[in-house]
Structure formats: C-alpha cells, structure tokens
Length: 283
Image (cartoon, rainbow, N blue to C red; front, side, top):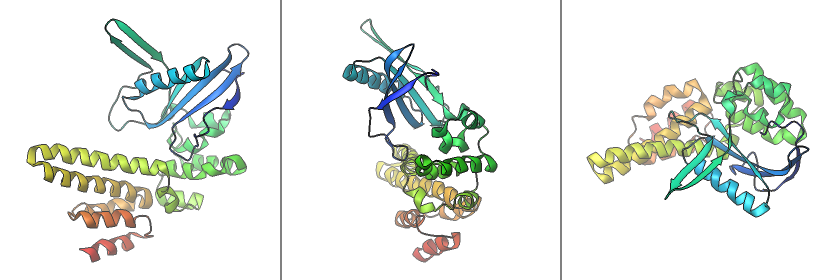
C-alpha cells in the first residue's frame, strides 16, 4: 500500500476489521527507518462512489487527531463502478475563500497483475485473484486456492476466493474446484451488498417511472424490479449460464409475492428444475 520496502506493522489499531465481514476500514500503526512511526488508513470498497473523497478526508483527519501521528490514507477499490466514473485521488473544497485539501492513494485491484501476487508474494490478495488482471483463468484460481490452503491463517479466506471466482468462472466449475456450497456464498456480506445494489437499482428505475405514471405504481414497479435484479444476480452466481435461460421466464412474473418466494428459494434449491417447480406451483 505504501511502496516502502522496510516498513513494519506495529499494531492493528482497528480490531473491527475482518476480511470476511463488511467492515471496510482498518487502521495500522507502522514504522520505517526513514519515516518513523505513522498510521496507514486502509479503506476497502466493493465499488468506488463519488462520496469517497469526502470520507477519506474525514477518516484521515479523525485518525490524526485521535492518535497524534501522520496518516497515510489508502483507498482500495475491488470492482469497477457499474457506470463510468472518474476515480480521483484527492478531496478538494473551497468555501468563503477557505480551502480544504486531502490526498490519498488509490489502488484499483483490477489493474494489478495476478502474477505479481504469486511472485512477491502478497498472500492477503490471494482471495481477489479472480478479479485481478489476467487472474480469471481456472488454473490461476486453482493456484491461489492451493496457496490459501497451505496457510492455516488464510483458510478462512477460501470462501472469499470462491465468491470472486463466480465473477469470471461458471458456478459449476467454482463448486468443482472448491467443493463449495452456494449457501455459504449467500451468507457472505459481499453477496448481500451486491444483492442490495441490484435491488436499489431496480427501485430507483421504478421510482423514476413512477414520477411519470403515478407514485404508488412507481413504488410497486421499483419493488418488483429490485427483486428481479436480485434474482438475476443469484441465478448467475448459483447456476452460471444455465441460470440465464430460466431468467426469461421469471422476468415475466408480475406477482411480487411469487418473486419474493423465488429469491428466498435460491438459498435452498439445488437444481433449476426445483426452482421452476416452486414458481409454477405458486402461479
């Protein structure tokens, strides 16, 4: 994160941060021969959003005030934004001729070569191998999995590797490689966040239509489209390409309760035919 070769981590100040939870920030107390003691503020985001510069400014200032040490802020973006967005590396504002400025380093994981993780090595990045540059091959994912399993301290990150592998590999292949259960994925906070993104996008689109066609109807459309977006993501993660075939049937369902049943059933069904039986019987 700092590109300083002789840096030493003295303490993890924030005990709340865990890889497999959705706490996105961690504060490290570090030291180096050249720079002495300082703090590294690591903020990890699934996707960059335009509020991040303001947040990085606030976090850096609060950390510096509380611990009385210089702060080196780092923003790590895991996935590419859903819509084209300029990713900036500083916060700037001016009000009544008073200026505020905060620089921070930006690391976009998708720009890091997967082989660099193996060569350096960088074991903490092994779970993210599938979404790194040139990291989406089955053999590369298998290599990352082997290294995770060789280190007892990294074993808990296997599910995270499985989760990101579903972005680039067929779900059946991921299950075969990792002896992995879909139910584990659905308990992952990362999965829940992506699911919520789908719901939010659907609701936003529905509300926009509602402004033109009537507020109540807009809310109903938003709710339906939000659930459908969640179903679409769940089908792709669980069944891969096969899930896309059944989605065209589900997309035509207008009953919100049936859609909610389908979304909930994705946690337990094992086959597409089992899922089809659920909504056909409800209809």
